[in-house]
Amino acid sequence: MKVVVLVAGCLGVIGFFEPFFQHRDLEVSAHRIVTGFDWEEINLTKRRAYLVDLNDNPAMEQALGLNFNNAISPVPFYFISAIVFLVVGFVSLVYGRLSGFAALFSLSAAMLALGGWMRELRVDRELVRAGGERMMTHGATLLLISGLLGLVGSIMVLVKREPAKPKPPPPPPDIPQARVVR
Image 1 (cartoon, rainbow, N blue to C red):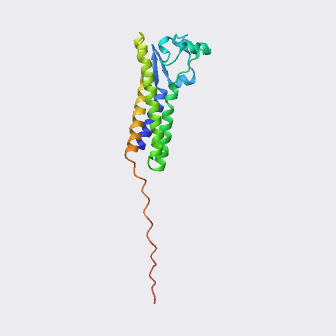
Image 2 (image 1 turned 30 degrees about the horizontal axis):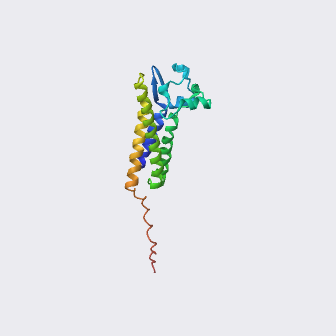
């Protein structure tokens, strides 16, 4: 299962650099969001109503003086799960097994990845209902697969523990050599 978690981390890292959104001809990855993203480049000078999270209160945000033009996307934070998967996978390979304690970290990272994907899916569906077009692409799919692999690996370890790394056999006992007397 440690290899499954490690593969989940690798897929998550690849998904970080793959396009997560596609708006018209512009592909936006989580890496691009982190390094800098210009809202005017895709003709969004103001955050439209369908881009506001369902739990947000736009009136409260305006009262607090938040700037809609510099909205921070939560998408890069979902890929923290990939880093956790990689660390847990490498430590488990070195240690020889994926322990239940490490599986808890992997399980929480899987929940972050799946929860982030489901949030973005909800926003994407609201966008389509408002008359827009579907925006999620390959990066979102890789985040989903990464989260599912991490979830399966973690649950399997929590249900059935991996055996401990076998100890090396003890060295043979010292046998005295016979002496030849003449």
